[in-house]
Length: 252
Image (cartoon, rainbow, N blue to C red; front, side, top):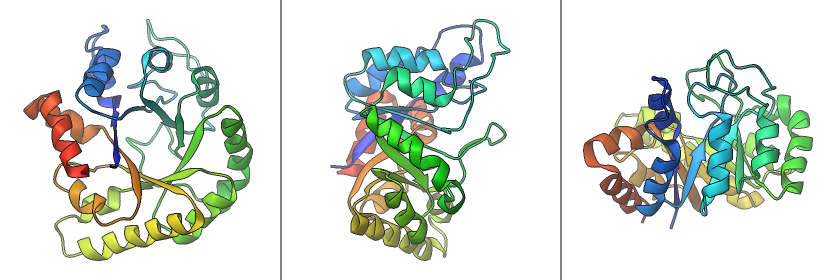
């Protein structure tokens, strides 16, 4: 069965809208795991606008399921400009201190509202290779956030990645339109290349209860999906337990 990892960024975003620890990111993680989620994903950005470095430390000390931390490996340390929020130590330092089961490297910047493209490994491959080597030396599985580009996926294998996470925004945008089938074929082809070169396959971004079933049953050897925004919205309507069950049903 394809694993379901719940991204808690939006829970943290709600918390950060007030000077409070409510809602608790940790308690929501526990609730999701109890309901059947296979893992937890967080994405600590330098501006700490949702998940904070301290959240990563607390989750790493408590979780007994797969913990996936995603983010830009080139993000440096910086001072926090908010009261009660600790400084950002740099993405790689967070990983060194937490050693999650999986680290998903993403080429995002603070100016982006959300992640919206995969790596260009022709440009960043040489910089990423030593980072990947360090992560693997720490016992951390490495996944690269990628577009469904076969040539780029082959490069991901060449620089040492264990998995790729396909950026599924274009698929979600095309879902239900005349372009759906042609876009989906790109992702199927990408999954075939990943399998051919020996890369594990994850996927994430804008997957939801409407489009997940088709994607999961079309691409090949999908190991894991990460879902956060849609999950948070659906949980408001369905409740966390029923929401988790609904997503698991899509993945069976």
